[in-house]
Structure formats: structure tokens, C-alpha cells
Length: 142
Image (cartoon, rainbow, N blue to C red):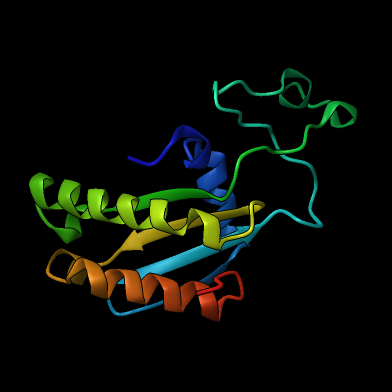
């Protein structure tokens, strides 16, 4: 299980990462990365899930700095397979994201889109593709 401070939940976070971030495709995955350094302040997501209310109300003076580490979001569509297969792929990807928390800068959002081949790929192969993609995008260390 991926701990709460390391997960993307809000549609706006997914959209920002996919639309404004960098992207690279691999055989079984597409990895999107958005780094917050140098950008406008973002909402604080703490361990309790509380969001800074001043920023939420549109007050930039009350903007908070984000806490926690890198955040991950997953997109596993019906093209990957039925519900059982999609959930299996998502569990495997979450486990890989958990392994990579210490390898990524804390101001990074990562969205991983599983392609249909992810259902048949081994976990080792998916991890290799994910690490290669992050390295190519300049955020991975290993």
C-alpha cells in the first residue's frame, strides 16, 4: 500500500501533471512527471489529508509549501483488461511506486498510465521500464 502523503487524489493534480509535465512512453507504460520547483505554490497535503484553507480559497499570500515526498497517481483503463486484471496491475504499480519514494525529489508528481501490455509484463520488467523512464526525464536516480 502506498501511504497517503505519496498519493495523488484530486483531478486537478492529475490534469496538471499530464498536461503541463513531461511525458515519456515505454512499451507497457506512459510516465508523466511534473516538478513543482520554480512554479506557483501548491496545496499542502499532510499525513492527515488536511489542505491549507487559505490557498484553497484562492489567497496566494496564504499559499503553503507541500509536505511529504513525491506523489504518485495511476491510470489503469479498461483497455488493460477486466476489473481483476486492472486491480492486479494497479497493486503491482503501487508497490513499485512505494519502492521509488526515496529515489525521487520530494517536489515531484508522477502519473503512470498502464498500457494493455502491462497486464502480461512481469513486475521486474515494469519496474525496469518505470525507472528508465524517470531517469530519461531527469528525476530518477537509479
